[in-house]
Figure 1: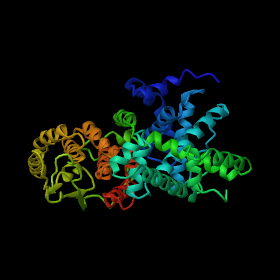
Figure 2: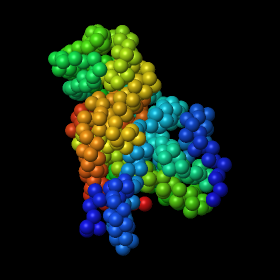
Figure 3: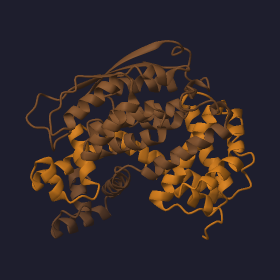
Figure 4: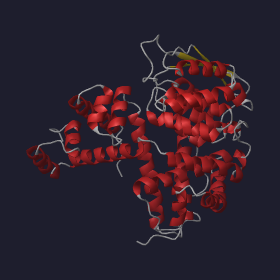
Length: 188
Length: 270
């Protein structure tokens, strides 16, 4: 599927382009704010959701090579809505308006793209929450081992043998996997 | 997947199995969906950590740009600003924090200076942070932070650090800053100096540079990592950017240095 011209908004986020970011806020924040205010949110909630949704989109573009094949406006709105609906669920509130209103004329690809961004970023956050449960030593070993540094050099820096480092890294990763599996996180 | 452990899966994905073991596992995988799911899970987990563990200066820079926009385009956050105490602007923080001082004792270890710390009395620093959470005098109240008991020895940096600490404790951050800068310039591995530099900059309302330093401390994985995350959260909280503040607080696990303060701040942000 061809990339949509609105891909430029993603490029703008990736490049931290002040003008593009301003355009995104100017054009798209009113719709998001309006919807969140109608759904038990405040101005601050709307500002938070808008910003964090843009960060999620940025991360997906950066790490997953997200390419926009649909217009940016409905896509962003849906990412924001998903995020806010999750938030109000956590707070035990109920949405007031129906979610299908002005977005019903957009294709399924918009919904699918927005859902994917939300799921992927939730998953990444979940992985990091579980990572933080590890002991300091495990975190240090994984942090050093997974950042491209040569393993022999890392072993030397940590004052352990290469064999021990490999074994310990494997154990730490296995523990992390078990934490993730404990929570039965749904893989997309 | 009964015969395979997570460590087997890790060894398989990491290419550490013998060719016979690998072949056997791949045969078993064809008829075992849960084993296949385990392999996929590990690939995703490893991939995510590899990509994101080093930290993302790009995300940090974007957050700053977005933070600059929010006050212009969202009414509730307009009054934010570094010293505006905008965290409470949306009314989400509840009433309990208003006008009440919360005293938090923060213990700070002076961890590195490895290159020039020679045999020494143990480095110890205790930072007493008095945090009054809201409403408007947030930064000034936070300025009551004190650092005591810096006992470093080395090739000159120790006395510089002590002088920096003395200024820091007096709230003379503008005088502490060049000393901390110098210590860090001489030893870029000194996360101690970088951390205090970040805190000093925050007190001087140079939020952008403060965040750069604190983010670097966080990404370094040093013992100051979580304190740095807490101050990052504070910097966003002061701007009224609750989302980013929460995001930084989420990085502080239970039991980590600063976890109590993080829990307190998190509560205020809800």
